[in-house]
Length: 563
Image (cartoon, rainbow, N blue to C red; front, side):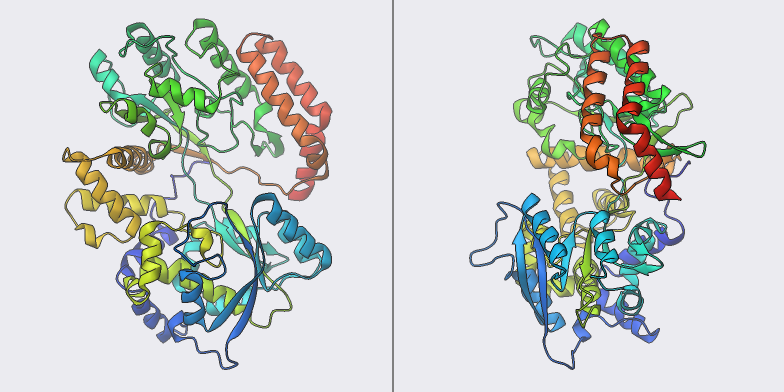
């Protein structure tokens, strides 16, 4: 399947991006227009005739969240705004983080007594709650109460988000969204390339080949621009591949360029398959093995930790790495910290046809469910309108609630909102980039940038480009004006080729065998790459063992789900 990144801004996606711009000054104005068309009122117009509605919640928290003095998960600026705007009273029936939260959800489910609203992490849990008749059908209240903007955000996923929470034709949860972040980008030290006269991407389409990476790595190792000891051409994390398409320190992009999709359940020729067992995956491992034999790949591959690889980059021992568009913000900034002259350029690995292969993420992540016994399920939709529409689009709301504006400006973690999920349009990454670029080009002022985050980014990047910047400006310039710019360019030029994977629920054999299968895969792949076992015979044996040890049965179980 060939699709442009984040869907080209056509159809409903255009509606989302245009609507975001139209409501930048005041979502309340937009809601007034919606009222004239018979749509849901804004939160500011809600007056519950029955008085204050009490809402009990199961709250998934995070460790070490910094609140202003006196604020907590149950009582903070976000909660107080919601309570006042919606005439509700929120109390937390339980709070926990990580595995402890999952246990609390399991206990509530086992007892058949859940809070009025709570977050669950997986569709397996939504399915179980539905089958035990514990959660409310939200279909009617969503249609009646959801704002046009909120509906447009969900619609921008072409049905993939809502399909995930639809059981027997009923909407049984409010899903968090999960946008695509693109492939694992090839980040190359551009200051080294300039110093050595290395030329890449002469047609300037942002795409390079596997052979280009090999050539540059050899040049960097031979010339050693920073006179470092024990130079490395390319380093990979011990797990080699990643289930996320943008997996940092992985060889995903090499595999994708060869048509392989490791750690991916997918349909091919009418059958469910597993990408790590494909012939194309064997070819990708052969490339990595060849690099290892030639000395291009890190001789300590398989034993280097994440921090070790970061140190290779920061110390000038390595000038090429693979990672998501935002690694300059939290990883490559370590390079800049030790060398203020360091710069990177972002490239995508193309296949033999000049296309950049990538796969879609699951469209949803995290789910808000409402107890079937709760008398006001529409309240969940009203909370979503407030936080994922009005708070995003209305500057007036921040003026009305200055302590909320302070939360936004200071980056108080989003888990402090009533719902610990994110709800963003599928095009949000590129929408924000377009807004930022308009500001950097002088088309709009910083004050006219829609979101507080992008206003901050614009200020930092402008200072960096003017020579007055700091590490933040360097990081934001590389991630936003390099990383996202590459994704935007690939999208505009129709250079992406997209795969939609299968996202199965956990099957019985997954529960018992998947961990061992993953261990088998990672250990075998390292042995193949380092030459401990032959590529051909080793991979053939891996596929046979994988099928025998439960892989084939899992594929059959997934196929039954799809039927």
